[in-house]
Amino acid sequence: MSNVNGNKPFCIIISGLPSSGKTHLAIKLSKGLGIYLLNSDFVREKFCDSMQDHFDNVVLSTMNAVNQENKERCMILCASRTSFIFDGNSLDYEVYASLLKLLDHFDYERINIRIKSSEEKCEENYSKRKIGGMFVDRDVIGDNVFFTPALPWKIRNQDVSDDNFQYIIENYGSIEEYDDNTKELIEQIKKARSKQNER
Picture 1 (cartoon, rainbow, N blue to C red):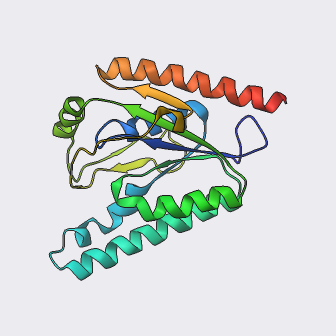
Picture 2: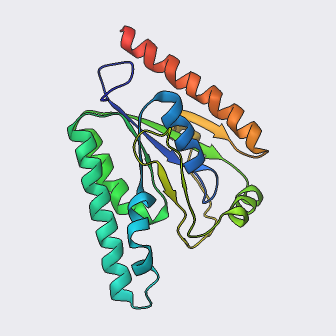
């Protein structure tokens, strides 16, 4: 499994507020497009006991170990020219920076998706999360075990223009509405990729 519908590999990067539905979307995209899902919390789960340590140096070294492993996983995917989704969070800024360089170096198409949601909706989603919980989706290619770490939750204003994203998806209502929006998004990406490959 290297590329889907074409020669040039692509990487999907999803942006959105905390608890706006990034992992949910990443899972649906992985299954709908048939591409690899790299979930940074998949690695973080291995270190969850250390992450709860009260000593700053232990927490810092653990975070560095998580970042290093995720950077290496990004490198393996890019070097093999595998199309994939990177599902990260606010702890992964170092990994994001490394990933963007890799995508340029290996001549990837970058697909940027923005989730639009309200602070109220994100707070509602966050309140339903089971911190420290895991679930498995065996239909996902790649990281199919998803871990929910106890991340510091705060809303940050996103003063980013929609022009920076190829696709915008809304998550203001029910999960059913979000899933309908996701299906439409998957079809849009498939059509766009198909057109590119005809050139």
